[in-house]
Each structure stands twice: as structure tokens, then as C-alpha cells.
Amino acid sequence: MNLIAPSILSCDFSRIGEEVESCLNSGADLLHVDVMDGIFVRNITIGPPVVKAIRKCTPLKLDVHLMIDRPLRYIPEFLDAGSDIITFHAEADSPADEVIDLIKKAGKTAGMAVSPNTPIDTVLPYLDRLGLVLIMSVEPGFGGQSFMPSVLPKVTALKEEIERRGLNIDIEIDGGINDETIAQAKKAGANVFVSGSYIFKSEDRKAAIEKLRSIANGFD
Ligand code: DX5
Ligand code: ZN
Image (cartoon, rainbow, N blue to C red; front, side, top):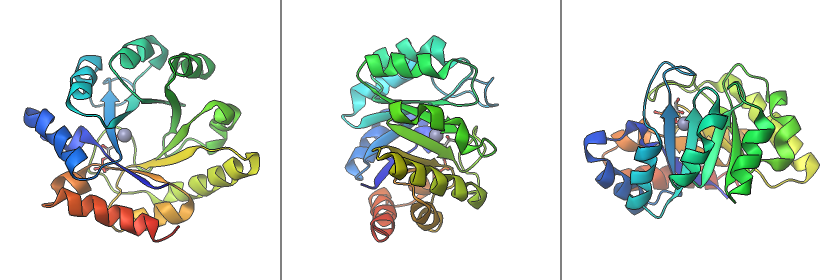
């Protein structure tokens, strides 16, 4: 199933409660929450207290994307804050097995992310225990960047491997997704589409989400 996940990184943080509510009212399937620590990436965004506050504002599943160094340190806090999916980066310095164990023991979905230059082979040893793989289609750190089509072969290779092993894993693509790039991502094999600036800058968010969904569904 195709899922549309607005990234609240592009929202108006002075009205975060209303912005989160508007995602649900506009038909979002998941709420994508970008956590950045100023070390793993240049930007600093939000931490567990804000995730906890968002949790109180919405019944939407929280898809928490950790762009942080040594994610193992913070998994308990993000679980307590009410995350449903926790995705950590393959490039971050933590034992991936332990991170996945901790998330799964809490009954939540573990995701692993790869930045544009990281080969997809990096996630394959963990595939059987993941619920989601996130392929970055921009360098992590900021919203509003341009989609990098060069990552699409990784999406296709991952989809083939998931099918070969008979697994049921979501392939999420994140960065520069709009009504043009989503078709390429879908055709390559992605089924969860993060979109920040395209959705939040559009005058009619509901129409923007519906448009993205109908383009993706058109290739099923
Ligand atoms: C980038 C973040 C993305 C970003 C997406 O590091 O992981 O989730 O907010 O924003 P757009 O859709 O504007 O590229
Ligand atoms: Zn993200």
C-alpha cells in the first residue's frame, strides 16, 4: 500500500499543534518527524519532549527519522515519547543489532536509513528484522532540497531483494518528493513517500496529498 508521510520539518513551528492536526485532516497516512542533533547532520531540530507533545496532538502514526549520532543512547526516550516507527541511519555509530532489538522489544517498527552515497548492501544483513528501509533522496539535514534520481537504482535493488526473500518491508523515500518526482520513486519500487515542502507550501494540503497518492496508486 502506498503511504504519504508529511514531514513536519516544513511546518510552521509556532503553530505546531494546528499543523499536526492539519496533516490528519488532509489525509496523511503517517507523520514524519525529523530529528537532527547538529552532529550527524549540520541542522538541529527537535528531541523527545517535542515528539511527546506531538503524540498528544494526533492519533497518526509517528514515523520518527533519527538523524543523530550514536542513536542507541536515545532509543528509550523516543520510545517513551510515543514513536511508532523509529528509523536510524546505517552510517550512525551504534551497533545496528542492538538498536533494532531495543525498538522491536518495545513492539514498535524498526527502520534503517541510508544516505545517498551509502550502498544498499549496508542494510541487507538486517533486512529480515526491519519493518522499513528509508532511502534518502537528498543529503540529510534540510528540507526543500532537490530530488536525486541517482538513488533510484538502490530502491529497485532493495525491492528485488525483499521480493526474493519473500519479506514484507516498506520502502520509504525521503527528500524532494513532489508531484513530478513521486512517479519515478514509485516506479523504482518505493511505497512510503515523505514530503515536506511540497505539502506544506501548497495552498491546499488535502489536494496535494491526494495528488501524490493518486499518482503513486496509478502505478500499482
Ligand atoms: C531531510 C529530511 C526530510 C525532509 C523532507 O533531512 O529527512 O524528511 O524534511 O523535506 P522535503 O520534502 O522538502 O525535501
Ligand atoms: Zn526525514
